[in-house]
Image 1 (cartoon, rainbow, N blue to C red):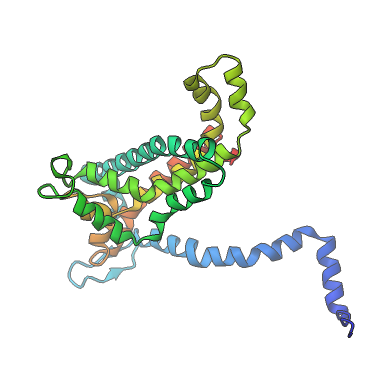
Image 2: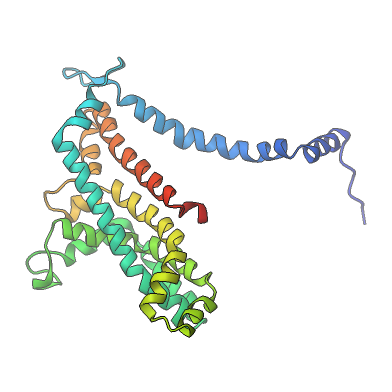
Length: 288
C-alpha cells in the first residue's frame, strides 16, 4: 500500500494563508460565481439599458450611438405605453393573487392532511406540468378556450384578459405551491393544536397563526409568479386576442428599433424593483 505524497511547500503555505485569512478564502470561493454573474447577467442588462439612450436612423435602420433621452422620455410620458404597463401589472397581480388562493388549500392538504407516504407523489404531481413544453401547455389552453366549439363550450370566456390570467395561473402555480408547502411543512403542529385548545376557530387559527408564518413563503412564491407574468408575451399573444402586454411591445419592436424596445424594457424593470422593495419593507424577505 503506497502512501500519499506530501503536498509541496508552496501548496502548504497557500493553505496556511487561506486558513488564517477567511476573508481571502471566501473571496476566492465567490469570485468565479460573481464573474459568471456579471458576464452573463449584469453586463448584458447594463448594455440593454445603455441602448435605450441611443436612437435608430429612420432611413438606414441602423443604431446611432449618440446619447439621447428621447426614447426613455417617450415611453415614460406617453399615456398608451403607461396604460399598457398598468394592464401588464394588473395581469401579474391577478395571477399572483389567484395562485395564492389556489396554493394555500392545496399546500395545506399536502402538508397537513395527506398521508406521509403520499406527499412525495403529490409534490411530483404538482411539478409534472413543469416538465411539459411551455408552448404545448399554452396551445392546450388555447384549444380549451376556443370561443365556439371548444372543449369548455359555453363556459369558455373566450380569448382575452381572463384567458391570459387563467393560462398564466396554470403555468406558474407550482412556483407558489412549493414554497407554501415547504412553509407549512416547517411549522410545528403544536401551534395549530394550541390555538384549537384555546378555543380558536379554524379560520381564526389560519388568520392569526398560519398566515403570518407563511408570509415569507408567499412572498417568495409571489416573486416568481409576479415576475414571470410581468415578462410574458407568448401567452397573451396566443390566448389574449388583440390585447398586448409590455413583452409584446418589446418583441414587436426590437428587430426594427432596438433602442426603443430597450426603453420599453425599462418599465418592467422599474415595476419589479418597486415590487421587491415593497416586499422587503414588509420584512418578509428577511425571514426567508
